[in-house]
Length: 165
Image 1 (cartoon, rainbow, N blue to C red):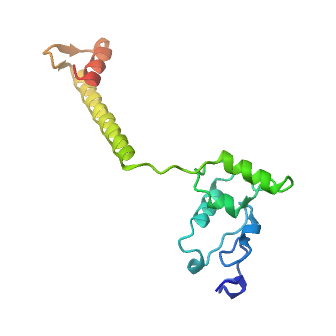
Image 2 (cartoon, rainbow, N blue to C red):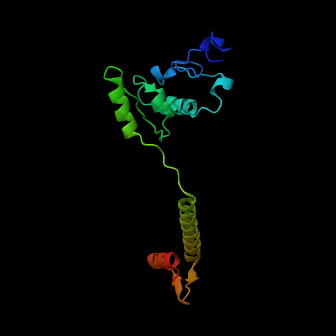
Image 3 (cartoon, rainbow, N blue to C red):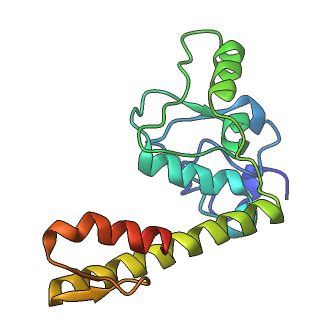
């Protein structure tokens, strides 16, 4: 099935970008327009997921997106803007793609490094919280055996829990 007319939802569908269309790369889509809902045709197509995300977060419904732009695996933030068709389409598209770089995949080493950093931050936060609770209750023994109590010692208390000394 390579023709949009063969699609079972053809008569009710208003989507400008149809996955079954052979000339889809020449078409464009505005965030206010409908998106293909035929599950068998759009199964596994990331650009349709990006269409949905853009339609929720787009700032301006008067700028459009091409298939090349929708296929770009970039960060979709609130207020994302497409291109203006009044200007040269290829130039605008090239500039848009330059402004929206691909999301880089992290290596396993980078992922473990971030996980370690997060665990360390979480551990420090727990230590600081428990130390503050102890200080509010009255007194706290530091690793040196000193007693820390009251509000004026909060900064000193934080240093002890942060450095572990």
